View 1: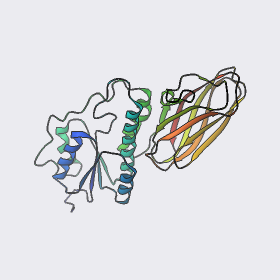
View 2: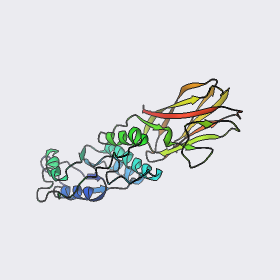
View 3: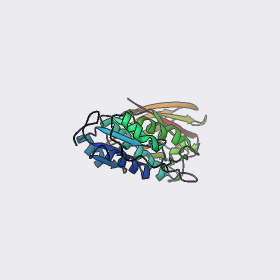
Length: 287
């Protein structure tokens, strides 16, 4: 593609889903021949765009469930798919020379593109008025969406990883695999994995995890392991509960593959006669 006055040189990459993303591609193709749409997160796409970074990344509706939030409780697979899309968009923004967001009224997109230095976009055909954005994105938002998913989407346009948190509801019960972790974990019994999950991705880089843990007064002396499997390695922290209360444990780890689902495991190292523990949340801060 040959760049005209004010027009970005190199290829233009559009990230989005559904008719609105297709509309953005059509508008951009009126100004540039080299326009590509990415809608499915993949490591191959990240590697390809790292080798040849887009001159302009266009994010269409960068918010969770932009295509419509399903009714009822959200399946874990749905949340994980949205998380993959959010991290994918953020990683692409890190690679692009420039990022532009298209959201809201699609009829105004031609003007937004022209103001961003793509003067020919939409010159001969504006976006159809019927391309409405779903208004259901925030309906029934739970703690995982509010404290993890939405911050990543908000940061996608600038390409900087935000601080996020995985609340207790994101984790699974080691004693009843597949079930949501209860508020209180009975630690009595043999040494074992008592909590695991959440199988969610994070942007690439070094992170500090802070696990907030609570213990009942009858916990006694009980050693624990907290470990994070990032795919490329396992980071471990060791601590011993000696009394009741709420405590925190910091653990540094590195994410090499931003689309890899991370697993955190809370493990008791010795058998216990009684006591309860709680994994309150895990806060995550980029280094």
